[in-house]
Length: 357
Ligand code: UD1
Image (cartoon, rainbow, N blue to C red):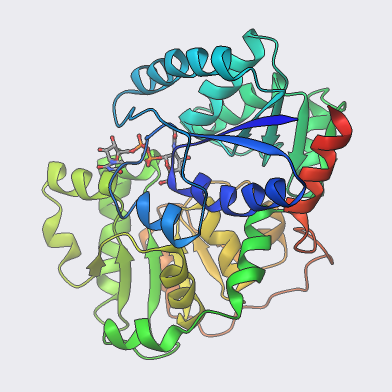
């Protein structure tokens, strides 16, 4: 049994940390391909090394570019590798351009595709990640769903075969790392006090590439940070957008830092009063850490967390973001038990791969 896994962007390095280990423990041979979509050391190497991911067998060095460039270049390079390696199954993660590129090439070569984090759906339908999810799910043979809701979403589109609710690999990783997290070091490094700061991230194209939305969000965060520090590890896309629109003044009070490694991010999250984010990963991790998250999106793939009061959708609404940032009580309901599985998702994925091929 030979599995070829494709990673390329930050969230995929995190997911591979769990699945790669589970495959190894199950005795499955894994060929790892890093497309190189994320290439800055603090967006890639710190995760690959920090999470003890195996050294990739292939580095494609695709880098940045338009969606067509990134996807097409990845596809051409992957095709050669698939023909050489002849894997039994190609494993793709999440919703990035590396995901859709891997799935398309494999499907056309009649190699079964296994999709980790299948079935997520959200508006706007034209966001690149949503397009990648929908297409990947429709050409996958094995669909590993992180929630029951994801299974239901697939059902509505007529996808029922090969669908498994396995839980969320990011929950596995969180449970594994939780005991090693120490927020005090990072908090003092940034001059912060426990529960007296806000952790924020911002990188979605519909927020960064729309000047009105970007202005509204930055001005909210900047105003909040006059009273309570807002720490914002800055994605390179956001940095470029701020420079392009001349919005530097709107960030003058925000505590801007470089992108952070996983364990530093999680320990800062634990110590924060709330999180304000447009990251799919961080809104879920906030729930794992018992922290409320304001979600700067019109909709979310993790709607269960909104229904139970853990996450609040604020879109790019300045006043709502400010108002909720200063609130101290957030009525939250217990979510259903095992909403994201029980921390054994990696093992289940490995077992199902063995049983399916
Ligand atoms: C990608 C994923 C998204 C994921 C996110 C995590 C797609 C369509 N989107 O979005 O699902 O949530 O990764 O970060 O694949 N850049 C650098 N250095 C880097 C990486 C990026 O400078 O190491 C800059 C480049 O200007 C690039 C821009 O950031 O054009 C955007 O990067 P890209 O990989 O295209 O998309 P992300 O926004 O990171």
